[in-house]
Image 1: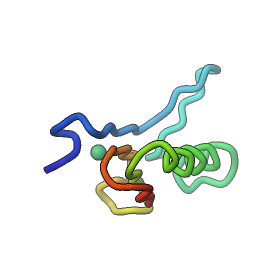
Image 2: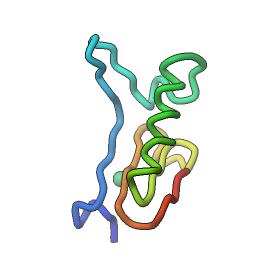
Image 3: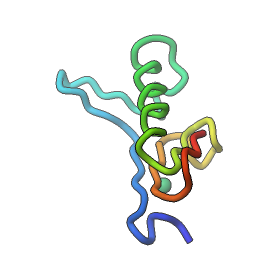
Image 4: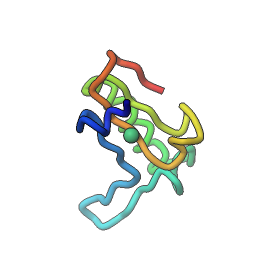
Length: 77
Ligand SMILES: [Zn+2]
């Protein structure tokens, strides 16, 4: 059963910064430079907070969003 069914996970596809800039996984994941670095830092930093973090490096189903879940322990891909 999906962690979403029990509200133990959330998916995030994009971030809007205070200056209005939007950083989206679909557009900016893997990009060289600040926006790509930001997304990688979010993924790596989330590993300290969530049980599992899945993103584009995990599989095609997560190509356009991060999955932040409560189950597991530091499963980050
Ligand atoms: Zn999810």
